[in-house]
Image (tube, rainbow, N blue to C red; front, side, top):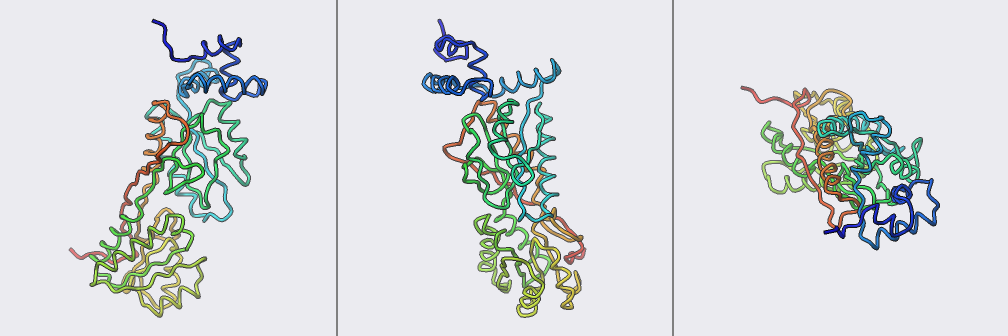
Length: 343
């Protein structure tokens, strides 16, 4: 019995067009007249046609490689943002490395694209990905709120490698910031620290919906043996503001992304780790050796790639109705900036 599932061939027959024209129209090829492309897409929607992005990627790759072994392509999209800390580059590099390793194991390869200053526009990116037959995108973390609504999400599946994205709302894979902060504070308490202080740039907490600060306060409220030190949350890190806070509240360990704070602590007479400690909230952004949290970007990149490939294999493109978030706890890394337990 003939299948009722619409195909490229049945669409072409119904529209009186060639199969190649219908295929080119659905993947956004500029070779097709815009009016014809609009008619094809309208007919495909009404018929309930859903193209298979892996099949399209297969044909695109075979055409480029002239018959070589197939490896599907995934785009890793980074954002060139002037406000993003320069130290974040190492973290992003690890994310891409994890994605590349896992993609290779699953028969895919990753290509990196940069959007924004010095990179391509979102509209240009859409054209490039469509013409290359790339329908899976891993979005690297953005410092400011990213906006990729101009991509034709009917043909793409996407995963964001940070806490939350709204434009559009996609599935995410990110560190478990709240749980990781609680674990770090518990470890510091076990090492004998009783006056932890938190130094944060305001934007770094806001973009995570205040998870660092919330976990810090919750720990202090539920551990009376640890003295509450008011967190120092600032627009921008400055030595003067830090020194004033450090001398007034006397934290015995400082937790922060900003490892330059160790220099400021030492200028106040602190001897690290003999009298005071320091913990980096992201060891991939440290500027000198220290203990801290490894947010495991390589693992995040690998997990994001697994989830993205699974979407492609299920032919799930578009913006999900219910975006899901997968979180991965950070790993504690010992270092010379905290005291060690004696055997």
